[in-house]
Amino acid sequence: MVLKKPWLWTVSLLAIPLLMMSSSGVLASETSFSTRSAISFNAYLTQLRQEANALGIDKTTIDTAFPQIKRFKQSTPSKQTPNLPASLETYLPISVSEANVITARAYFKEHKDELERLGEKYGVQPRFILALWGIESNYGAHTVSYPVLSVTASLAYESREPSIYKSEFFAALNILSQKRMAFDDLRGSRTGGMGQIQFSPSMYLDYAQDGNSDGNKDIWNNTLDALASAADFLKHRGWKSQETWGRQVKVPQGFDAKLASLSLKKTFSQWSGLGLTRFDGSALPARNDMFVSLIMPDGPSGRKYLIYDNYRSLLGWRNSDYFAISVTYLSERLK
Image (tube, rainbow, N blue to C red):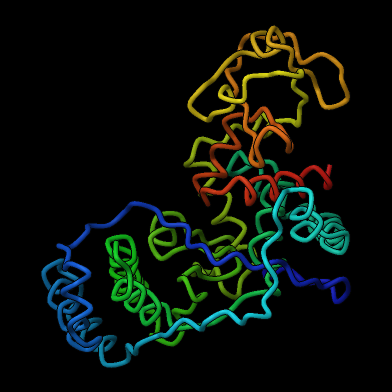
């Protein structure tokens, strides 16, 4: 069953050209950037083909795919392209617009039963699953379609640190081999993010799910597959269904900003002792059974948050506070 999409309230989200890479897969030996820049892309493909054979990837897949791989050239941004928002104060109204919130609420109401079944199965609150979908692809409406093998091979060829892109290239080959997908069906963004939830190829291999039990894991065209896959990723990143993500807080004047770090954890009582309060000025929860961190994505003059382990799970999806806060903010608007 594919979720129906409301015909109203479509909105274009701010596209963030970041690829969320997982670390699965075997990394092949590296060729230095100076050496790669001295050879043609076709010669580089020959090297990738040799490495694919050495990794034991199915020969039929290699023979079929490699003749179709072409150089994918990233377009140069126009001088007229506006700058990205400079702070969360300007970023959040774009990434989580009112139209986005209205659409999310419509989906949440229309498909409440399906979302609750996913939430119960994977141990992730439905509002977070829906928010991830909304932020990543505007509920499946904002996806781009480039050949993933051409994109990842080209990025590896052009990058000074190609190992991640090469790992994703070989993961994409394995998708073709294991799932018997056609080359033209394996498509994604200009950085290799695929489908309605922008999974990298390695994330697909590790976490893709058959959400509607039809025997396929189609994160491109089947929304239930996409949502189930997102939930499975969060489940395996340690998501805690009985906890939320964090809260916005206030800090006292003269507070030591060096205490804002993901590597530093304290109890609520300890943070209270340092003068932190809820955003409305009331006291933090009086509990010592959780260890949480303080972050200031925009520095001491910007928003401050105490974040919990579920927030860290979102950073495992994409290591960006702006991304994670967009997801959590949209989820709050769904409560």
